Amino acid sequence: MTFHDPHLASGADSGRTIVEALGGHWTPRGGMCRCPAHADATPSLSVRPGRRRLLFHCFAGCETRDVLDAIAALRLPGGARVVFGTDEPIDTRKPAVERLWSEARPLRESPASRYLAGRGLTGTSALRFHPRTPQGRHPLTRFLPAMIAAVTDETGLVAVHRTFLSRDGLSLSSRQPARAALGSLGSGLVRLVSASNRLGLAEGIETALSACRLFGVPCWATLGAERFKRITLPASVTEIILFLDHDAAGHQAETVARERFAGRRIEARYPAQPGADWNDVLRAPPRGRMTTGR
Image 1 (cartoon, rainbow, N blue to C red):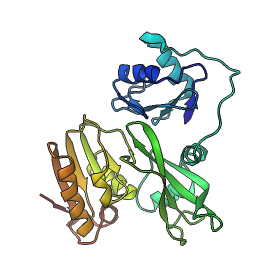
Image 2: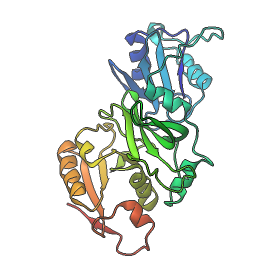
Image 3: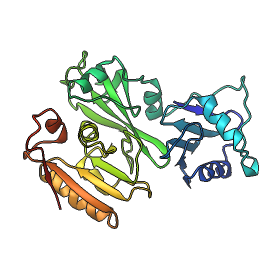
Image 4: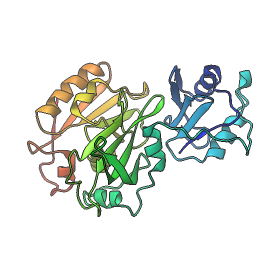
């Protein structure tokens, strides 16, 4: 969850000190760094300047006190220290994206977990369930159950992606659009699992989860073939495997990705069947599963 440190100054200097000490990169909007509360091989702690103080969010799920205790124990220079208080009120004014993400609950035994199970998949901590997710603009807004995905960049949470579901989770909602983002995606992705130097990229969440299961490669979702030209990846990623749909958009995404990430080793993989994606492959008999791109 996202939380506020009630006694930590909100200045950029403190944020920069913390992020850089934990192996991250600071920007005016904040930064991502390794969480000191767990063995973090890939940056999972977001540090962002709020209206009055720094905001922290550990995407691995570390508890508030554990993270702040660990930061305090670093004894960083320049006064970037954490001092706990119990009576300071917390500013509850949140943008819609952060509010929806914080209201959503873990997937277990939810319609979202049933939706994924029906596709041979299990979720990760980057996915949650919300029973009443707004769909459509006022005055036509409806509230539907949805799988909520965190969209993050190097600064942390920037948007959420909503997969609207039937009440029982056995199918997508019949009301369109069944999938929609809330917030500006920018250069963000759905970082489903921790990355290594070898990272898979796929268009959709279900495709990325399928690639993780089929090939044992950590995979993130770009949320569209057109977004391969916008996303940014950690510098630590030196090898990229593109798990693409076998269609024109998939081939175009490969071309864009090779231009975008020139200088890194890139491999493209396609399902053997034209028109198929990797979730189709996961649920099909294990024959003729893959073709390889350039």
